[in-house]
Image 1 (cartoon, rainbow over the protein chains, first blue to last red):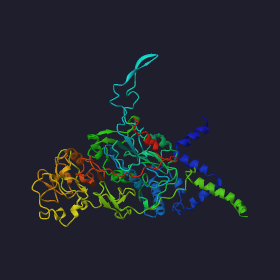
Image 2: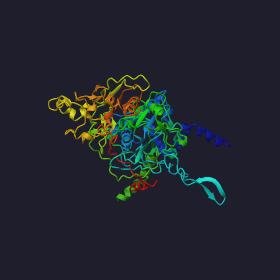
Image 3: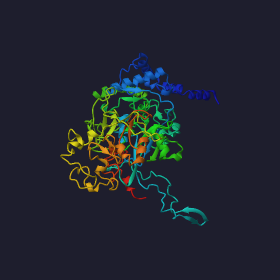
Image 4: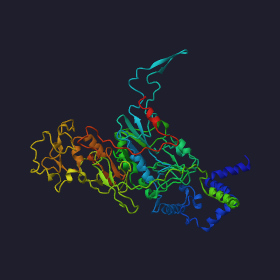
Length: 353
Length: 278
């Protein structure tokens, strides 16, 4: 291996250093001079233009998890100042750490869910999603036909061994042979708009981020912008996200949403209590998803979707506490996990109450 | 002449444009359709309901949490259902004494609060003495027994009193409503309960659901997820109507609007076309 190549590898190992070097190369010649001038004058830290989408200080900001406490404080002050000016109300950006000895889990009763979509819109109100063009929603409610388990009792004795020109190998065809022996999302309706719900021939299954113990999205992220915190919730550092959408492809639950355009959030609808990894207003070109309402749950309150559910089908709690609602559900009800054969170990449980 | 001026400034414009792109982390300009109207601000809905239409009404009050300027609730523009709670404990009272159960089904009632039911009951608020404004023995005589008979009042609650199907016809009004004290509910042992604590009455027959409710598996609780934290509990009649519960355990609701269709898709008929094929 040549000297040059070894040098390149060393540089790639030091991710933060590598990024800065790269950015320096991008801002070549005259542009670099112009960029450096306001930075050295110190106008950026004061955010002379709070409406600016990206300040230079933010441009050079590191991964939030790896930043020093002083850098974090500066970054949060910068954000609070900008959001307060942009939305014309006092906005707080929290960086409360995840509580210790807690593993967050969620349980949802699909026999009670009536498909009213209140959770979907509660989530939008709480988490400052873009309201219109693009309209971003983190929860998807699937309307599924009852008896969707295609493996039926009537077909049990209708199978027969296949006969072919090569002989009879006893391979079963007919009957249940090519039917899925589980729940199929093939017939799900996501855009149903009924006058009244529930429809008696259907059941409803809301799907959001399943907060996997082995999250495929975290494995896919090339820059470690998305990670699992020690309470088990998968979070995104919006400032570090490069918008490559690899995580969206990796997620088997269609839980991640991409900001294709600048989010449109009316000032009067903006929720001023935010968290750095949660519901603070996002920018164009970053990924977002359900965080179990990190701004609420880290301070002990229930997620917004749970509070909105009119039938009490949603349960949230600490999986390490045997007295919690979720553990009570796990110990007394019939529980399944969505697409559990993928080995993602979701902490979102569906149960039949 | 104007054109000439512009062309001389072109090089400067190009330079500024380059700086702007270099400053932006996400330099790729995605096509952004601006022709759609901005989200129109509409007046917030003030008359809302929680679970049961007409029996769980709540009025939006502004600035209940002054720190963030939160109202007590935010409601849906289309269905006026409560979507979001600024203060989950607004208008609640302590749940009060619950029967002691020492096995593992005991509930977490130390910090339990409920919303009182009595202000939401139409006939309870008809006069200063509640139901006894009329059912005082003089205007309406106190019935001698609990035998079902046709009554000409309260048809909005039960259309035909002879067809009250709670318990498949085994029960009638006065098995749950106290004949002597109409402001109270009564169980088979003659214990009287407030309308704010229907779970004590319902639980005397529906034991399985009562145990689940006490454990936190059945029913709704909001507030804190922590064991021992302050929680608002929903009681039985906030979701279920005991007079029509045989027809549907939870009355149908109007759903919130569906998600936006992907760009270029005119409708979602392809989903419905698959109905009934399996």
